[in-house]
Length: 238
View (tube, rainbow, N blue to C red):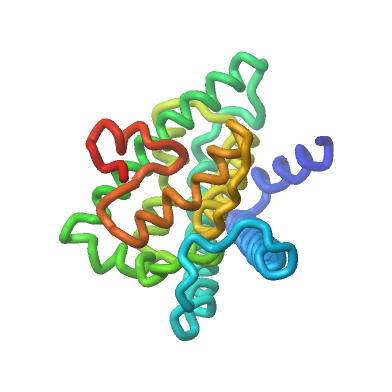
């Protein structure tokens, strides 16, 4: 924890261009390592251990993963730029109390679930179809598909925390942790892996890839990120 605090303090105080480089590297490391490990693990579980299976087992498009990796790295650069805005907006490195931590987590989760749903709906309107079409080139998704997005869509994603922090206090350390776990969860829901498990909590997590894969297959359904609350409200749940 002391080491993390030192890194955060250094990132806050260093020149903007070095802070940008650090942010880009963190985003790329999280993206590449999580996607690579998940991709490798799923292939092994299915082929070697016969555990679970692909939700959509059609062949990938020619050079699909190469395209996804390239787009994902560009998105990571944009996320790094967005992090510089959070560096200007934060008011404390960590919450002052456990209650403050819970309030920040709850407020951001409610905000982001709403933000991601309505931005996602916006991206499916006519003016943004070409932009969001970059992501939907991956019909059969892979873990690498998570951030295969147009730069404009990457900006929408990158601006979620700065928008929230402009109206509600969010500690810098909490913002970083939420961002990393958000990236990992986004990669998970693009895993195209179906693991049938008899556990209430783990079962819901394992259902998330199937829920999002349906969105890629059908289009205008299942816009939610973590849950289907807004999809149920607006009857876009499939």
